[in-house]
Image 1 (cartoon, rainbow, N blue to C red):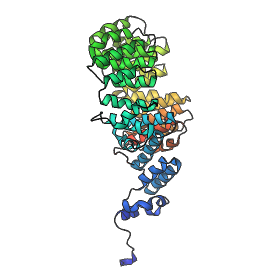
Image 2: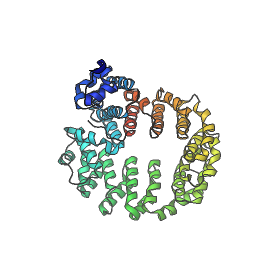
Image 3: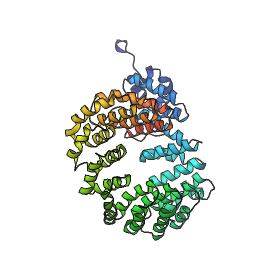
Image 4: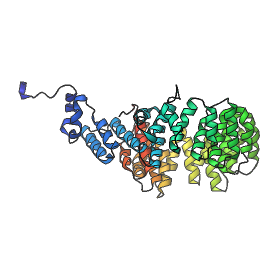
Length: 454
């Protein structure tokens, strides 16, 4: 060859050769599939992670990143999706439930996993088939396996089988399921009956269980489902404001506003005439979202209340004042109550004119020794565009408290939405806390537009 230069390989191998992939330690993992293209690594490392070898997959990924001198988000997303899929196919019921919950947050990006898992026998295949059917808005006839799943004695499989009843619009079947002695089946039936509108049988069943189900969580689900049934549900919802359980009463407020706004104003407005209770503050939040001046004033007054629990809930409700009462909220950026300060700053950070003020107020809080407080302040600083918050937030990803790590993951997702790489989340794919591990995996997958494949 001229000048003694040796020609490198051609085609896909040439692209990998020029990128350095053939000359790095990671080539031992990649060479086998090089003939198929330049990016065999994502699929290969995904299979490693799926087999439980997440540490080895991440080590190979890091070698790959060092070699290319840049992160490779799609490859990391392949690994992350495998971590979630491995949880979803677990024999441990809690691990499996957490895996499917994480997949559900991914929407259409989880389709490839559902398609693969739905070929499995048993509960994993049934759950995946139900999720895939729901993801497709239950178009067409339900898969036969879901009808069979409903006929089994296994509770988890029967819950998946409820998708077949909804798909066939078998209201009587769902009403019967809502009367089942098993709470998990009643819970699933309530959710599905909430989507069947204009049917008197569904309305009657949900109304009955909103009043009398022994499980408060299911009464709350029925209340929420009734919100989609319009004015016909308003009397039952108004009566549910007297439920003995707080979770039910709190769910009534948005549900009755959805069902019948006029009736909602009539029953919620009187709550503002008394001391701020959790129910009254929730009512104020919903009413203020409909431009109710009295409700807005109620929330602002509650921010000054002597009880810190009242102030904290009022700060949550203050989100309904965004766009209408920013100047009234602004003094709370420097509030003496850190809980109020962080929450109000989080609301106002969307407005450019408040950002420098928020950065000045929250930087000292982000340096506090309490990591739970510090990482929440950092999340707002990230949204404010404070560059110094990013490095500090990395420390939150390594905190000993899993709650802090979860908050740090959520905060990092804000950075990822602005193009910051998600590689700092990669070590959390091995986290000993299941929720941290799956939350980090889901954020990594969401950070990349393509759907990782298997």
